[in-house]
Length: 281
Image (cartoon, rainbow, N blue to C red):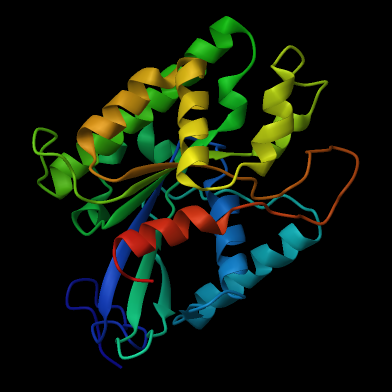
């Protein structure tokens, strides 16, 4: 087994032998990045071109999280500012060769300061981005909503700093990597008691948004109408390929008293779209 020349750790089988693609998850604290990733991976293992773990330790860690989600328990979010990538091998399609997928899920603290963002050295390899926004940040009292919108915007700006610092990219030229903008926790929009006063049509439609081009525009309009019009404008100005998604990693209302098996909705589609944009699927 070969060894990394920089850190001297042993490489898992397949590293350095296949083409690789690197996807970064971006979002502040408690937006649901880890739950989203665990749910997407679980859905993917039953789909076409299901990936295979190349690190047995990581595989067991992911399966432990799957078991927690299936039992209705919350999983601990990532705390590490610079966590190791989750590594998967994607089997070949027809005559193509297999590919290695690296998924980066840093703790939300990574986007709270320029110093912490500067530590995200993996951005020099990033081929695509999944930018998550907590649906809970789009509703509530006006002052609280403004504070949440500001945090989302700051996260985005610091992500751009990471791209400029580590990948040497410039906003003036536009970024070629695809960005999937995901409004997470959409199951909570149906909680009438918590979100009293929001349009009823939003409650009825949000959890069932499909990911056609038309529905992507609906999510885009949702963000624009809830204080994030500048974010939408910035994304479409800086990136060539942007698509908007709405999903629920858990597929159920939160409850402090009951546990329910999760029933995720549309968690895999954002990841699949990014990979298809990179011709991986």
